[in-house]
Length: 472
Image (cartoon, rainbow, N blue to C red; front, side, top):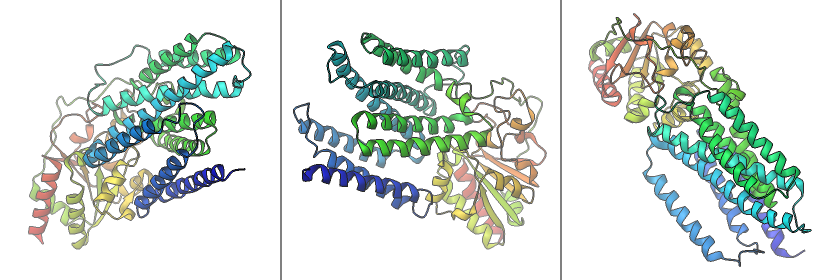
């Protein structure tokens, strides 16, 4: 055995070990940065050693390969510098989509080669298992590609839930999914079928990705982003089987399995089932929503809010996407420190789908140096809220909406929420009385315990900090 294959395998082994260590380190805010760098280094080593493998086809065209690598690296570097924290969900969606598109391209090229071998009854024709794996890679990759593009459009505000509605989305999605599996099975059973079957499969899969994500919206978007991420990992793992590439296989399995575990946990936290997500029946299908007619929300002055907070014993902050938009996390941390200097206990309640992607709020608060032990998950938060004096809601809406518990016709009915009305007082920081991302009015705003503090979240918190300081 020559030295080159051994060096390549050693490089792959190093890359895989770094992936696993990096993934483990991502589980803690203290080691997440190091874990990210470790995984990136592992990927770099895997790419580098792959370039040493001589190409049997393609004329060893390394110039094109390096050109593509350079362009991709440049785009990635610019994006990492310019993309705002609030746009990270959109960026993750694009990355998921590109991963799916790569799987489709790989599968299509291989299937074209297979077709030539099948038509010629060549001995080089792949086995049924490899053929099936490649067809599945195309299916999963295509769903991840168009699904991620739709998710990007929704997160960016380019696609409005109210304007793009499918009639009978669950039925359409079941037909497309079953149709895709029938085509995959048929082509695998009879590989001499014309290439048009592959192209039909690709078209149906691309459409299924659109119809699968289109009905999903509002507070459910973080779950579908996690699921699309898992799809991308599965597509990469299937491509790794096709190419017998260990690092693609292991990397894809790690991404696919971790994404699937996260999706299942988020479904449990949202009181949904995974099968509902896959066939696009997500969201409960309810239509009613509380209206603001004949209801009056009570506002609070900055001075009164500062007094209420300063003379409390315990305060819980509920962060949401609005805090990310306002870039208010650092001033929120400043208010937390100021209150604690006055003997007030301050914690943060994090809903599993707060923000627009999994872990969005955790990253945001870590960026502001908020201690991780101050963050509470859904169950711990709801236990603590009964003994809380004041809850401050900063840019969150759907995750504290009591309609999820009380209104059986609400689209979010059944979704576990932060039950902040258990606390003695609640203060909601909001620009206006407009509904949140899900487009559902929130009865919390009109509850007798609640007071509204209108304005930009960052400016309101800065003013609160000044008022609290003046009371010291």
